[in-house]
Amino acid sequence: MKVVLASGNKNKLREIGEIWGDSVEIISQASLGIEDGPEENGEDFRDNALIKARFVKERTDLPVIADDSGLVIDALGGEPGVHSARFLGEDTPYDVKMKEIISRMSGKTGVYRSARFVCSAVCIMDDGTVLERTGTINGCIGYGMAGSNGFGYDPLFFIDPFDAARAFEISGMARDEAERLALRLGEENLVTGAVRADLKEYVSTAQLPPDVKDAVSHRGRAFRSLLRDILAAGVRGS
Image (cartoon, rainbow, N blue to C red; front, side, top):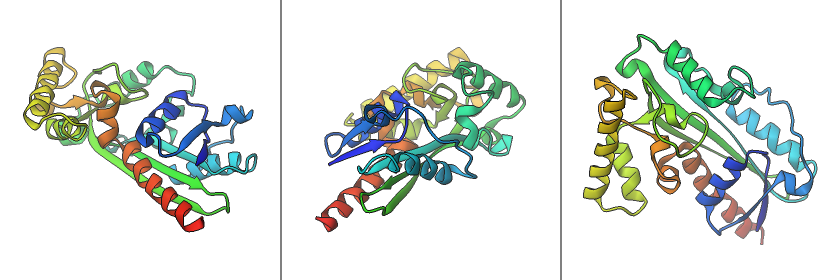
């Protein structure tokens, strides 16, 4: 089965491909000569995902998948939210975006630094049927950045050491080893100032290798559920 990803984001294409493995072949919209995209003016993540999927579906007979994802920060009234990619301007480097968020979070501690990544994933099948799933991962905004994996806001988003250890364990690591590694990463973050005592031993999603992050990430959760729906729909339609 072949599907088209309605996105020009190569990182997103790679990440979804790693989440799905060999179950479905994912091709980029660019491979079909679709270089442009629609205005993402929806009110929420689901709206924007559907806008992107419908735009590409009008130009291909293949099933189309799309997602809209973002960082939701409670203390900032949900910002940057659906504007995550366009926060401070679409071409603004993410390290600049993250430094601005750190500045705006000044004075916030503990639970007042709560945040979550949200992913709304959709698929428009051959017959026009729309499948949709949402995935979320909860965490906090760090006092600094840590890690070089992932992309976007990953270096600024921290999860507690229990969730980090669970991610390592799900990816195949022995429990004791997973707990030790998560603890070591969290302790390093205390030393560098990426976290403070109120977020003691928290680990950024950019410190998790791709397969480990995918085990617990918002995009991993949304697209694993969506894949099951797509395969089930394919069986019913065969």
